[in-house]
Length: 112
Image 1: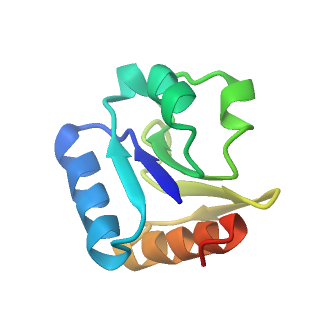
Image 2 (image 1 turned 60 degrees about the horizontal axis):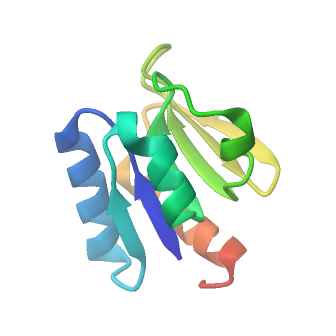
């Protein structure tokens, strides 16, 4: 399964990617600065995208990604999780919550 992390600042995306790689070493995890997200999305075609809501990504691009975690920087620092057509909002998302979302994404993708 391919995971793309485009959070800002850089330290956040590195910490999130490192945590995912440590707990799920079989996954392919890439980092991209938010301003390069559109190009990286087209080239890498992730199954899971972890991004923030302050960088515009075209809706048609987002809809092609099976599972997304969108950090709501512009609203509250909560997260919106989209998977299998369902949307939920997580208040103060923890690393454990994120890793659970990664596990769900892997199941959806058949990596599980």
